[in-house]
Length: 180
Length: 428
Image 1 (tube, rainbow over the protein chains, first blue to last red):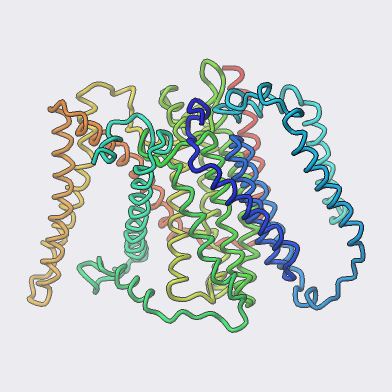
Image 2 (cartoon, rainbow over the protein chains, first blue to last red):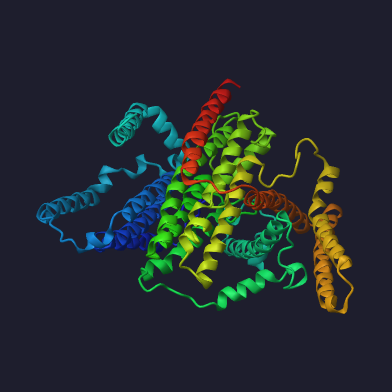
């Protein structure tokens, strides 16, 4: 490992942690879709999100990892749980699932798998290792780099995304409030 | 031995230096230290609350009730561990562990001194806010898994409260982080060590920066952090007058004590964030204004003098105790406690004086480390006392009032402070 890569983080037992985190993510991802109890699914989803955030740490993207924890695991999942608890779980569990879309879902999953496999196969030529010097670009100043990208190169896209969120908030308020 | 000595006098935290042995040692020290502080806080809270209400508090177990926390711990450990019949067993078992893990994980980035931290991350403050916000999951799952009405209401209140106050808290933190970027190259930092070093470079604690902007941001954080830790006057998730005991109604014995430990650990952690961001972290008062070897020595004496002072207070208690035969064992016990405190103070003073007059590197770095940790913990201790003071002073909020304060008062003010800070930072 290049020691100049990231002061503050010296990787330890990298393959071990990679397989551990990936295994945890896959296992808890399976639990999310197999548990019948919605709260158990949500808790498994939190484990998935946290292990993915651990993978981001290992990829020297600490900012993304921190945002993953703070936004998804800490914010959105708490709201998920909040909503799930308001729903009558007993009745939901007893209800029969009437979703007959599994062939379509299977096809979509297969397509995604094919995409992953092809990227894995051609990955070396798609992402030239030399052109992406991870150590320099996303090492110590990862957060600064993300900030420069967001508020410099991709300013327009960023502002459009924030406008979209604003519209969504306003829409939610207008739909729930009869009198404003 | 070589591996042990390898780290002394290092200029980096063990995590940054890649020294795993010392990282582990630091983690053990922090874990033990937090456990001791929680025990002290338990006694102090009961005692101080009692004195606020003109009572005397625990007096029977040990002199002035000093052994009360140990008696409580023994009681909790030996109590029957009840899991309700209809509870969701796995989640019920997991909930206190989640809360405790979230509360203790944040300690790896808390800077007790320039090298007295387990590690330093580029995203330190982001990591702290994120992981401490996971603590609410423990409360929510506990309330849900109990399968009972009051805990569920407590859990719902808690999740709504945490999510609301996190927004104002985050914006207040951002305005402090903005202040770190007011240097020559114009880049700020999210690292906990970097934030304190930025205050050192700019020669001002961020609470006084752009007066009153820093102060307002600090006050918003100070309010939001009480709500985040579910303490009075924002302790609605466990409001005993309405919800019995809120989310931990069905918990007893060891599991309940894990919740307690997690709550106090989270209190120390958020106080540490406030100290790091606004109160200059490990720095002693006026590190630039009153510089020089003489002032350094004067401030380095404080840790030892504090402990000697505490020992003196305990000794005063010995003198004031009734001289009846019945109190003899208590007098002896308190005298031993006073001597131990004074002895600790004497040891600290000896190290300081040794560092002042000798040239040995180890003694000097030890003395400096003690001073850093002392100033950091002293500032945290002020917040811990404030937590008790709030609880004794203010009545509990009603839930709609709580939401109103969070969304309609704190959030607009923190947004305004953030914008004005940015503008002032651009102009100056």
